[in-house]
Length: 343
Image 1 (tube, rainbow, N blue to C red):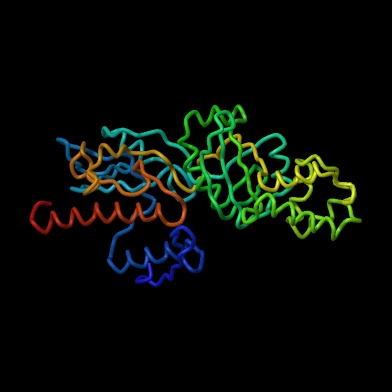
Image 2: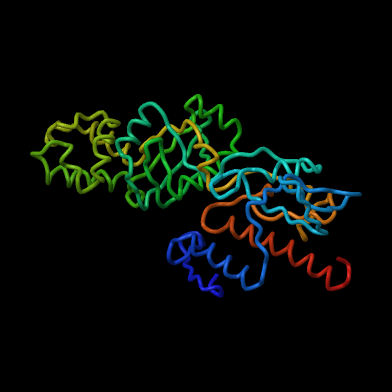
């Protein structure tokens, strides 16, 4: 990227982003490079199918009936997420038609929905971004922790989003019977709003605030501890009347509040639609692709690159790295064959 004029930065977890935080800068760099290499880009030319003869690729057939002959075809149409970019899942059907298996397509790196009281709270806190919080997704039926993370998250009109939530979706979508468990309200997101403080230290901090604001209503006594939008939801979950005087708060109520601050619960009910996902989980089976060359084991001359393959990773440039590496492998393998007269 830097060789092509795009400065990058490294964030927590080895995540790489453009310094500008604009994905357009990455796209522009690729387009400039393609133009330098005199690569012909053919637009408004939707591919209908890949033509195969005697187990080898022969040509691609466009919707308008045009045939483009080719000894090698790299199928790099992306997944089914972000259809606005042209990634509409066409590649899966093209690959399937010539004999490839497609593993189940699911949304990954996608926001999560909630319902009932959890949805009410999320809507009350809509637009609020939390930093340096610890999240834990749990199966309350089996008491199993499915995913843990630390970082940023965001409340929305439908539920929760943000880096930690998106990463969690890539793990929980693979959890056994996840859809059924979500329907039964068995998957809970617990947010530790004060991960740097133990229960004892947090209670001591709250007692200091209570002493400072002892003559105020409780809703006005937490302004130094919580974002304004979180105060009422926290009090409601702790079963404390928001207009109650601080000096009349009981020990039990204070302990309830501490518990909520360490485990703010959100019941997860669903994944957002795949159209809103950053990436697609599933795709062309890796069992049918040579991992060294990315060439199909079924059709000679057919190669795969990027998200169309059944591989995916966390947010932060890792999925782009998959695309770069598989594309590089497919391209250089063909070039090397040509060098020794085998193309």
